[in-house]
Amino acid sequence: LRFPLQMEGLQGALAAIQGAGGAVANSAIEFRAGKCKYQGTTVRPDPRKGLVRVQASSEDQLMHLTWTSRVNGVVEDDRIIFPGEAAFSYVEQARNNPTNSRVFLLKFAGSSERLFFWMQDPDASKDEDVIKRVNARLNAEEEAPAAGAASLGGMDQQQLLAMLTGAAGGEAAG
Image (cartoon, rainbow, N blue to C red; front, side):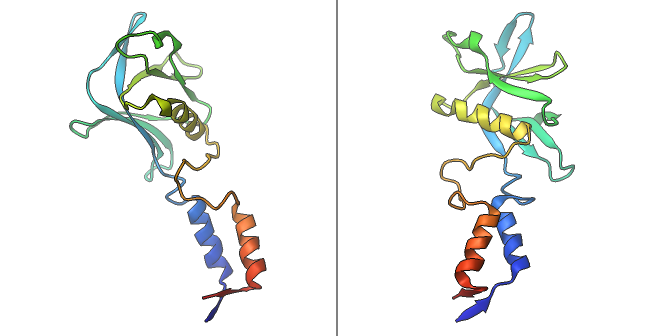
């Protein structure tokens, strides 16, 4: 059987696959982390289990960074962050800390506000990837698909559309 391609439907489907206004673009970056309290010159960990999530809100379309207790599910911190307003980084001073060497900082530009987190995921090999992904999302940069995520074989929407319309000669086989 042969079915004619409906270009508008195909373009909409491709946009959704790539996340242009779809669920993929709004997918959350999340990682298990506790909060830390900044007291004077010392950062002290809050022992509670937590989850940090960076995601555009479906309600206001703004980028939110939230901290949620994994014990009771309560969102305790919800910060709206605009592109270029904050940076997420590793705290070098914590590297030799015998208790927790994986402390991270969300620093706001043009402000003294700082949020510290301590990583609770046991796999430290993911830390650099988390930093890159959080910063890309906070700065509204295009993200590469995560390992194992569905992709379009390295093609963008226009390349895939050209391939499908050129190879099918305006029709799709079924």
